[in-house]
Image (cartoon, rainbow, N blue to C red; front, side, top):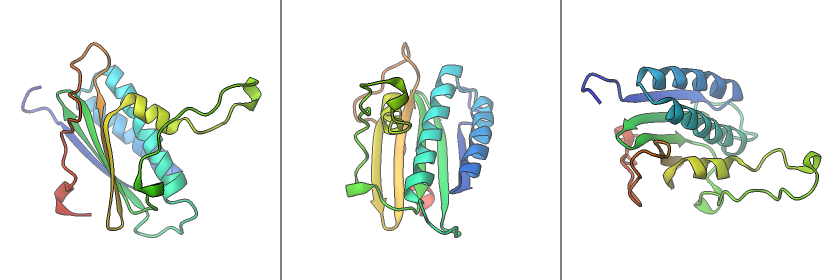
Amino acid sequence: MPASVVTNASFHLGATPEAVHDLLSMARANLQFMDVEPDLLGNAEVVIAEVLNNIVEHAYAGAAPTNKAEIQVDLMRRKRGLAMLVLDHGRPMPNLQLPQGSLPNADGPVEDLPEGGFGWFIIRELSRGLQYRRIGNVNRLRLLIPKPAGEEELEAGAMPIPFGMNGSA
């Protein structure tokens, strides 16, 4: 990757479905500008959408809009893929742990299949190095969306970004 190529993008958005929609369009444009490969771009869009929708639907569910109801997303191009750090001030994860990401029961007729419950399975399938921490009143999720199959494998446990982004939050 040449030294002149942009490798980072940072976004701040309100915790609303409309803001998530707008961010996805901006993130796609930024990732294309960062020359992210099409397959990695597609996986990144899915992971970003699932993470942000979970934050809006669960961490901020029922919360009154305030200046604290915001989300920060930092994307960093890395040799092995795209690193992502997401910060929010919503409710903490249950038991301060990431959901397991098990698929819901799919037995039975198609019309009886659950409408949701697939998000964390998808996030876990498309990313590596998932780490969640609650520090003070801030949720911090970091992960790596690796280059698709055929690219260099991510070393076990490797995560290229620190928790303390800009020494704040």
